[in-house]
Image 1 (cartoon, one colour):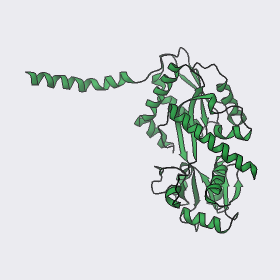
Image 2 (cartoon, rainbow, N blue to C red):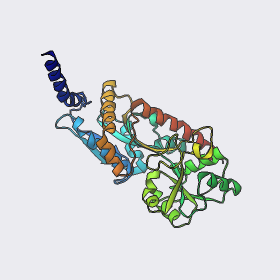
Image 3 (cartoon, helix red, strand yellow):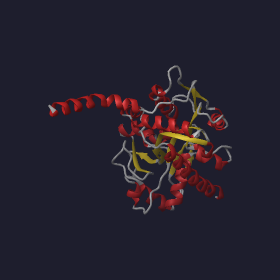
Image 4 (cartoon, rainbow, N blue to C red):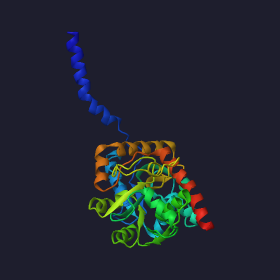
Length: 327
């Protein structure tokens, strides 16, 4: 009899487990109206895609009759949208997709706002910068590429998406860390033209995120020599980190990130709800698979961890840009 009772209870608990998990989901209870999500980039890019994906998967966390409303505001290189949310009432009704430029622009006198003006909620992108060469390049490893740069300072042509932008600063960081010198070739129209130039054999390398060149690597046109991170990148598990490839004592880290945030000094309860809800979302397999289909590798960096990442990069870019301006 007791055995049958215990079996029945166990069965009931198993059946109810999914319901319990559903009830445990973090939902937003504070909104009484729609929440605007400012995307300070043009539609269609990685930042826009990741923003729309994460709020789509979070829509069921909103009270009935309310929704997340994405609005693209790319004016002023994205600064207009950032400033709008930074100066908004700290009530959780305005969110914004911040990007790695937020760690750079203040130190280039391009932005009056910094990471301190925001409350980070969740990271949607945190891809490492990689060194990419033509598949026919004589440089078959990161070590051979660095050796060539040391042998003939200033000869290797390294493309970037604009002087002072992340990939130019990543190359400057390589120069600083490794004692090399490149011939920096800017493509102010963005990463696409620099990748096209590399495929065409007009430059020796580009620095970009691995996902940006996946189709060209898969087609046998380009190859990735190394990633600037503490661990290997899932899209290219055979590609070593800088530390591995060069036998360095420390990691060389450069990341292109996007963090969904709201205004600084929001009430603790609002912050807790938003961080909790979005953290659960980015951990779901369906969300992660949706990002992968867009060529974006999912990460789980939320709340205070996201804040610390932004702070770390702000300090790194402050020093790096100061060194660059001295030259």
